[in-house]
Image 1 (cartoon, rainbow, N blue to C red):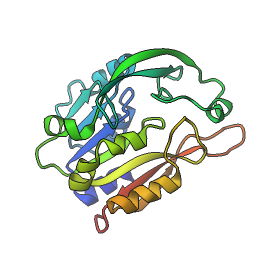
Image 2 (cartoon, rainbow, N blue to C red):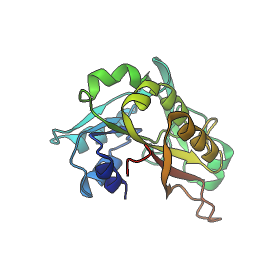
Image 3 (cartoon, helix red, strand yellow):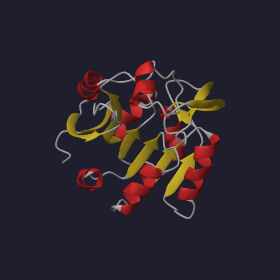
Length: 215
């Protein structure tokens, strides 16, 4: 459904913030997205997998940065589930209770950059973008560092939102509504996300916002 929306809206390039090992890029390739993908993943081990996934694909580039609201060096907590729950933020008890098998196994110093500062060097000139952000509670910081790009060039944005707080920060559904109102988007889809398999309670969703009239 997401790729159908990308095509219908006339998106030129997909920006993949929080790419981990490249699964999102592989999935949209498998279902018909043939345009450019620009992925960002800060941790060394997932980035190695991301680089391998993008290798040989001339329209998929990978950059070893975290995206945020400032240029800095920061310490990232590494999670045991192939890095998928790794975050620049502290994991809350709600996350630990919902997924007791996921533990923190180390730390890594990573480079954080603002997408607005990187855009001219990593995105095709004058391209219309779709920004997907899956950064384990850091979504608000990514948005804050990409405001110009979002306002001027983004036809759509996908954000991971929390129904239950999972990290020391994190955007809620209400925060998603506020984001849409602020930047002039409308909500077009909500995809199920991380769920507590013991209770059945959904903890996170991925919300998709597009420009009015894009679909």
